[in-house]
Image (cartoon, rainbow, N blue to C red):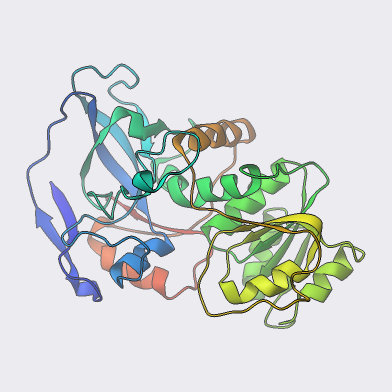
Length: 334
């Protein structure tokens, strides 16, 4: 089998293709033939050694992938040969609260990830894909989609008629927009170009603000909400956008802080009102399963920006790092 390994960090040519034996599943394990994988911002952080959790040198990267169960170890009863599955971002976080020992085990960081032909995992670390999704579409779910789902449902639940502010057009933002609309919410998007604005509107955004034309966008959000502010924020920007997000909030709003980068600061005006800030770090297996029920019911389809072949893995990284994509960047096995 083929597997890319991170032989060196801080340089893309440190991502090296290797040949190795196909592993055999042990008790409770399954072997998955990976058909597609998707990139997340954490993968760039791992490459540059800026991720919160140090990665192992030589690890197979990428947390997100989807494939077919091709071999079963003894004792496996929850999955069958031919099942279409994706792995959980945190394989040990099955339900409940995230504890630090659970966070210290991640595919593509502490253990071999998805940029390989085959991946070995415990059966409980996998979830079945919604039937209407392709492997390419299914590969986008484990990190971005579960994060968006947790951002909207893991704290104060989103209610029909609530207004949600969503920053950007990355994977988390687009999933959050799709989920928010299925829940009956009004959605306001913040983006940086007319092309990206068109994508947000096509997915159901009720209002879109181009931050390049209106860099101080919080007052415009308040105008669009008749001065009331928004009920939820999916903050996928950096910490330096947080003051404006907070300034756009209604009383008792909730901000799901997905990213915390940069060197911003908060002033008294930004902190007005009774606003809850909740840090979101993907979600549990139980969240993944619940989310898939919603995706299946509403026949939601992930937005894919571009697909690269397995041999073009480095090019996929380069395209993703350029930050011109709208939606998910994937790597297929063809």
